[in-house]
Each structure stands twice: as C-alpha cells, then as structure tokens.
Amino acid sequence: MIKITTDSTCDLPAGVLERYDITVLPLGIAKGGRLYRDGVDIRTADIAAHVDAGGEITTTNAVSIGDYEDAFRRFMEHYDAVIHVNIGTTFSCCHQNAKLAAEEVPDVYVVDSANLTVGHGMLVLAAAEAARAGRSVGEILALLEDMTTRVETSFILDRLDYMKKGGRCSAVTALGANLLKLHPCVEVIDGRMSVTKKYRGSMEKVVADYVRERLAGRTDIDTDRVFLVDTCRTPGIREAARRALEADGRFREIMECQAGCTIFCHCGPDTLGIVFLRK
Image (cartoon, rainbow, N blue to C red; front, side):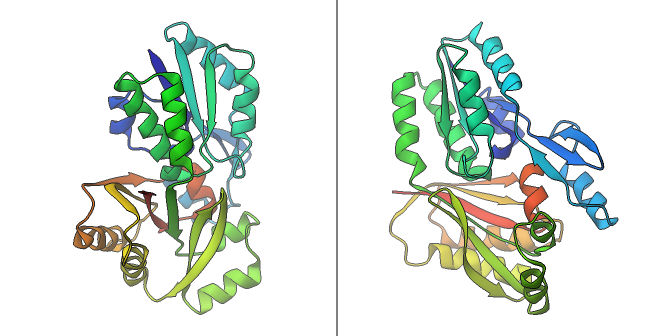
C-alpha cells in the first residue's frame, strides 16, 4: 500500500482528506510572538481578528526536517511507500526540508507541486485516487509529473494590505489599488506568482467577470473537475463565482474549498480563485 501525505497548504476539504486517508502536516503560523499549527490550533478567523485589531501580519514557518522525518518513519511502519506532495519550492522551503528528511527514510518520494493552495491540492487528490486504484509508485510519480505543468491556478485579491504587510508589494502599489478599487488577478506561471490583469469594481462583479474570462473560448480545459477556493467573508462573492461556473456548464464537478491560514496570511480575506487542469 502507498500512503499519500501533504502539507496544510493543499487546502483540500476535510471530507476529501478523510475519504482518501491523506495525512496533512501543518505549517507553522507565527502570531503575536507565538507559533501555531495551521488548521490545528489556529484558523483564518483568528488571523483576521488579529489584523483587524491592528496586529502585525502573521507569518508562516515551513514544516521542519525533523517533523517530516518523524512522520515518514511512522508511516513506513505500515505502508510499502510514502509519496509526499509539497507546496511549490519557490513559495516555501517545505519541499527542501521534506527532501532532506526523505534521504533518511527508504521508500519515501517527495514531489514538488510547483503550485499552491488547491493547485497543489489537485495533485495530492490525483495521487490519492491513483493509489486507491492500485497504481504503482512509478505510475503515480509519472502521473504527477505530467499533471504539474497542466495545472492552471489563478485568483483575485480584494485588498493588498496583507501582501503589503508581508513585504510582497509596496505601500504605493497597495494605496493606488485601493483608491482606484483595483483587484489584481494573480496567476501561477512556471512555479511563480505573476499579476496578469487588474479588475475594477465590486468584488461580486469582479469575480463573475474573472471566471467568465478565464473560461471563455477555451478548448484546452479538462472539464472533469474545477476547484473554487476562497477566503471570503463578504456574502455574495463566492456565490457569484459559483453561478458563473455553473453557467459555463462544462465541468462535471465543482469542488469548493476554503483556503487555510498559510494562504490567508499572504492574501487576506475575500480572495477567490479557480483551479483546473489543461488537456
């Protein structure tokens, strides 16, 4: 049997993790001088309340080499192999740490998703489905290698103060975007985040336009499944995106996910994205 493990950045729903027996290793979240575990003893609402009250932006810590090694050794007592899928190496040193830990434990294979949130989670789910179907380690690794370059991840930001506080954009850029009511669209391209477009208007209108434009005229989309992921607190935003996906009508399954603390630390509330696979 093959065990699939991942990091808390994958943002897959709890029901999916339980159904496929996927084990999640939590990243650390530093808030107010204390270190918490993403999704274990801290939630996105805790971060939002802290920042809304004037607190400094929370930061993230990669899973340690020791924690990876302990987990890998524990699972190898019961499984023939472990396949661990990490957040992209350009976003965190989790992959580097997991690789170092795997060098100490035989039959552990570490995969760089080159992605984040459910762009990473899509690979985790594919690995788990393949393992459940009885595919070999080699077959699963080949599947993931093929998929990695075909995952299309993008999202819309409502506000830039979280990115500004985290040092990922300047105060001038953030102020300008807020004054003009601009909402940047960020896309993961070649394992890195790039702003590809800026929308203007209310988030409810923006996310509907964004979804329609991402899908319009496309014949290269695998329509088996699309992920809708968000950190939305404002009513209507998620619903507008869902209606746009349903109106498109091509996807067999729309899987809705809530982004965890790692993504929230950098993007803040009312961020929304869609993730799907290209053919």
